Amino acid sequence: MLLAHVSDLHLDGAERAADRAARTMACLRSMTRRPDAVLVTGDIADHGAPAEYAEAVELFASLDVPVLPCPGNHDDRAAYRKVLLGEDAAPKALSATGSGAYAPINRLHHMGRYALLLCDSTIPGEDEGLLDDETLEWLARTLDELGDTPALPAFHHPPATLHHGYADSVGLTNADRLAEVLDGRRNVPAVLTGHAHTAAATTWAGRPLLVAPGVVSTLRMPWEPGEGLVDGATPPGIAFHVLDEGGRRVTTHFRVVP
Image 1: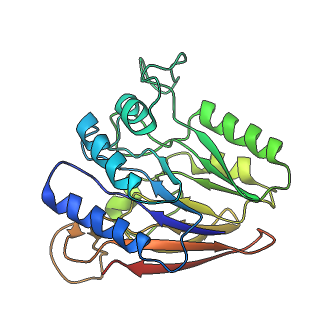
Image 2: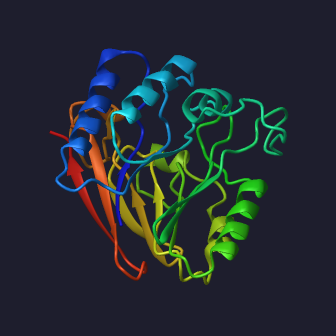
């Protein structure tokens, strides 16, 4: 399976974000082999406004492969459900994460012999992340039901240290609980995230953690020259994940968008 992975479009109605996202979609359309799916790990909208999701719907419709999103800290669960997913904006159950918060948006997608588990790691109104009890229970139950099917969990907030002060201050706050869920599960070859606006690869919980580059901007690392938190001049990026035939190994190639 060839999975294209993008993150952090931050569509805000302005020309700059729209142009960078459109260039990224055009790059994916130009591939000599279409990816089996395009994963988008959150911050699709910048303000969580319905018009921003309408813009995303139009962009994603330009691709002829499935586009599989999960929410980020800039996304709004109600507008995300209603406009991007075309679902009821007011689900029956409310999340225990906070008073009056909508339930997390967790989805299972089968891609041939593989499975993608898209988890909601957001805390409404906050920048840092949390996989709440409902999400962790869903993840464990779904992995149990999948048996030996190779499965890739994907969500917004990285659970590991990336060695950037700000990025690490707004990461996943309960990574230890996720590690407990994944412990001993040999059918989970890697974990996929976004949020950091930088292509990154490390090892976490005994498996690869692969972080997609940002579309709207790139995080400036502490050892890089320049001023400010982000580098807006670096082109958008894409991660291409290749799952081998047995589904036990993931090879990743990072590319910048022309």
